[in-house]
Length: 437
Image 1 (cartoon, rainbow, N blue to C red):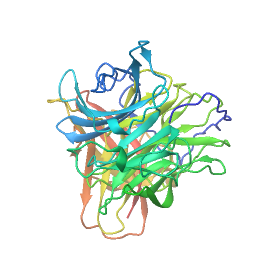
Image 2 (spheres, helix red, strand yellow; image 1 turned 180 degrees about the horizontal axis):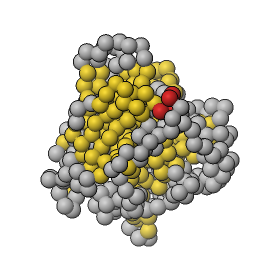
Image 3 (cartoon, rainbow, N blue to C red; image 1 turned 90 degrees about the horizontal axis):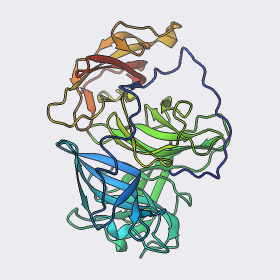
């Protein structure tokens, strides 16, 4: 979601230390500005004669071998004035990060979805399904498409094959969401052709949450709404926005990053990670406006590589982290999923991880403790044990531990990830996550 300077909000309550607090997300290094992989030098044109001046939003999905499908919102340069259009347009293409320098190959898959008007139209927050057959987006200027109904501001479109571009005739409005930008993001695909849509929900008493809902892309019809991440600030008028999910290897959404507006300055917004997608995690600030006073929004996410855009800046910004999702093994099987940064260059040193499973130090009324050679404290006592070592996929950042048969214990434990960056021989302790057995 873009920032609107006219919106005023109150001060966020300070979060004091607690024995029951989650371990902080493990950063591999400081925020990198500009992002060396996703920027206007590399993603520099729309493939139809337009030059990219600014990237407002950029979704990355790995398609293997260090290649990523890009769905982005950009400001193009006005050829008459040689300055950036204030309105935004959507572009798509393939970014190859397996070579140096990275290469960008744009296509015209969503060209027909960019509407014209006075100046240029104002499309925003493009998201494509993993099979690239469904697109969702906002348009801040209310619009009508063929067969889409009255003017609305959030739309979807489906195509039968990636060999043809999306067609305006197949656009459908999504009238059941709020009018205005809701930051739609496709977080999962379903066997019946529907998708799970994540977006900004309706305003709740303390602020606006992130929600998820079943979307039929052929009609724009939505199913029941589920809250994914409640607004956890202590101010009225706060807002969660810019959702983006972490998926396991089966395609299921397992964790979530989003942004939280909760400051007296309307131009600042923190970046947040939460360990689940059912309002069941404790949000962790990864980029806090107390440290970085800017508006973090609309990330492109590849495992632990967060390519965050900022409405106040020209280029996206890179933060590399390790993180762990909540896991439920009560059905007798399942998988623990964790992420490290994606390093797709051939010959890159791998990230290796184990997961400690046991009791949270808070339940034992002891403080977290340091271990020599490990960055960040340990927040669990590994009473169950430690998993085997797993390597993270260099293209998606994903590592998994699969458990085909687990005896039900009807108990809840805590997990924490230990990750070795073999390039620097640094070991990091991640956030903690819940384990249901």
